[in-house]
Length: 307
Image 1 (spheres, helix red, strand yellow):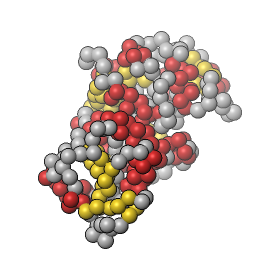
Image 2: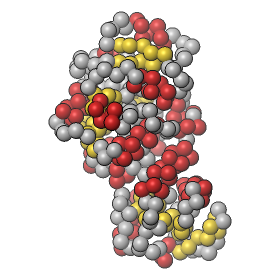
Image 3: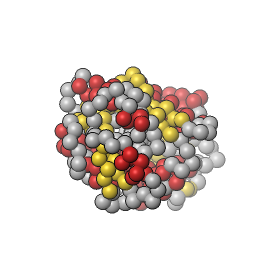
Image 4: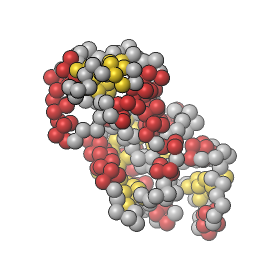
């Protein structure tokens, strides 16, 4: 709350949604006695219902989101607003993020933070949309006109932050980053993303598989990767009655079956489809894989996508 009230951009409205809390949260909000702050009771339960509740009370010209456990850099609103005002309509403003917490940040979260920031620096969001959620859930701003044109949060499903990014793509909105850190992302063991089934890997895969099949419905699909991600992807493709070929580079696996699907030699990968790379290779392996795909005529972010 202090990080919001201390913003150097002063013209804002905070719609704080109390999700049926049983602690002292509501009293903390009331203690600020700031006319810019409006406390609402969630009309449903959970994050998505809370966002939809707040949406009914928006008065500003731009919209952003903030999570209760995070911190805004003092110039966050100013920097994101500058991106919006410096461009034409149809812009989603974002910036860099950094994790922080009482304990040391894990290697996995640091990799995700660095990947997000690299994606922001190169403004290559949609090229990597099928790998992970490419914008941190509380680290964006958009005009209210664009927000209402896509019906805001009303048509989203969980995981809602990832679905939001796909909706931006669907509505041909451009994501543009500033060169500033615009969000401090708190890592702690009680985070919803750590503990809710809504935000576990299978939920993300179900969402992106649905968008992927809609985008590439007339293309032949070739799956690479036979470990956990590959098996999950194959399972979901089959659930969606999607025909695909499954390839492996491991000689001992060629000709065997997983999920009742024959594994084929990756050397025989055709050149006429879309590749799903349900694999997490290290840097050296990734370079070899991408060089192999390039020779086959595939391009990462276009005709080949990391999952």
